[in-house]
Image 1 (tube, rainbow, N blue to C red):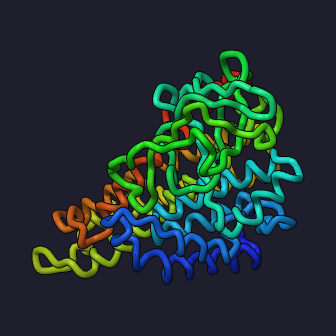
Image 2: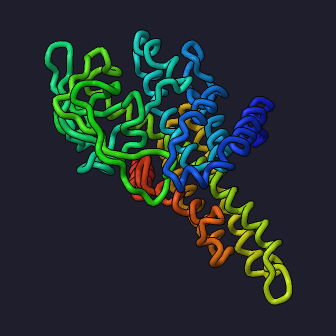
Image 3: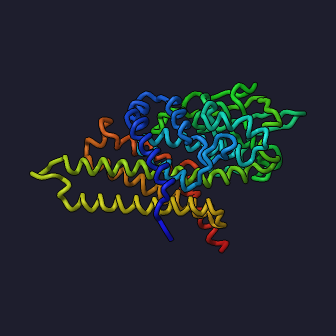
Amino acid sequence: MDFTLSEDQLAVQDLARRFAAAELAPHAARWDEEGFFPVATLRAAAALGFAGIYVRGDVGGSELSRLDAALIFEELSAGCTSTAAYLSIHNMASWMVDRFGNAEQRQRFLPALTRMDLIASYCLTEPGSGSDAGALRTRAQREGDHYILNGGKAFISGAGVSDLYVTMVRTGEEGPKGITCLAIEKGTPGLSFGKPERKMGWNSQPTAQVLFENCHVPVVNRLGSEGEGFRMAMMGLDGGRINIGACSLGTARAAIAQSRRYLGERHAFGRPIGDFQALQFKLADMATALEASRLLILSAAAALDRRDPHATMLCAMAKRFATDACFEIADNALQIHGGYGYLKDFPLERHVRDLRVHQILEGTNEIMRVIIARELMRQ
């Protein structure tokens, strides 16, 4: 078992690190404050291959592995959690087109998606079905060469801005077997969007409802066959869970780095507060939790790459552990800074706000426990 990264992986990691330091970190606080969606910066990331990380090369993808993607998202999130997380969502949607789309769909959508000339969103959650994704109610009724959609999706990153919405709809019976995946283009008649949500964090990306009112979607925009949508969604979420866990790693790492600086700069009782053993122990525990989280994320990514039969459980374990641990790391970093950590002059309060949602999206951490326990009981 060799934990050493290859030369290519080190090069990709360094490229992402340098991009994050130059193009994300200097602007992250302003983007958060202004609610600014940095499309030009996302396209600059796409020019480096970060918008189609595990998409095939014939349509402009980078053809990298899930492990490579985890390395990239850790580095990007150290610069801006929210923007890195949006890239993760775009990658998941693009991968679904690449994996399940036919030749015409791949050529029609993916060259522009890998450049981010087209921006993609992933639409699964509804106002009445979050954790119980198989109970979604957005209905797609086929009439000739179109599906007529009625319903809506909730908490959709990129809603109103994105150009393509990879959407799970109900075409058949109740439950998972009746779900189908459609690629819905912006401007489709009957497609509209709710007002922007007012959020705790992730403010550098827009979030709103996606609404369908007699929305006419061509049948040629269906990915795969009718009834395959739920399986596609779950496969997409395995990778999404690794990516969001990796985004947690980078943010927690940035919080630890900020804490190390502060422990050397801040004085109390006549000496640097880093001299106090209580804070040294806190820092040691934070670093240990980060390393354990990283090992779980990379192990799960490697399992997904090799198509391990237990990959879904391992991805759930990694996502649950890493997002919980990294949120606690950021919270402890804020505590180390005392009152200053609560101010927007320091990045810690933003780290805490941005990381909190990682315990909810891509499947709540309670659902991760359900997935893990269900797999264990089958063994």
